[in-house]
Image (tube, rainbow, N blue to C red; front, side, top):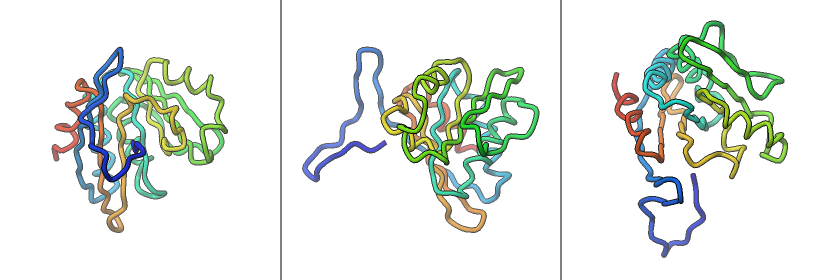
Length: 178
């Protein structure tokens, strides 16, 4: 996330609230095919803390939906996972829990969304994967794990995963494994 700052400001190591301590942890890896991107999502599915929120960002075509397909495979979701055209959120049930897949591409800002519904989804049990999560602005919870994709070549993608809670730290080790 980005916090407005000036050149003279000092970067903070973390943020303390009444409930938690938020400290930034980051890892980066490169995938060389859609299949490797799916495998990355699949690896993360096996070790994500319950009820995790994945905030997927990056340009069109970077592989956000492919990543979610891997996440779904890792959660044993049956059926095809695709980007929704008209619905913003789809729920998939599996033996390993619920996967909520949101695609906010059609939105320009959080003002276009029913925020009561959105907060209900975030508070409901299950893993939440939110494509185009930057459209939520301040409505994206601090505990969201940010997964940013970038396009480096025809099939090459760099994935930067940023988490803010200590209990999310295991995802960085799992993400970097081949």
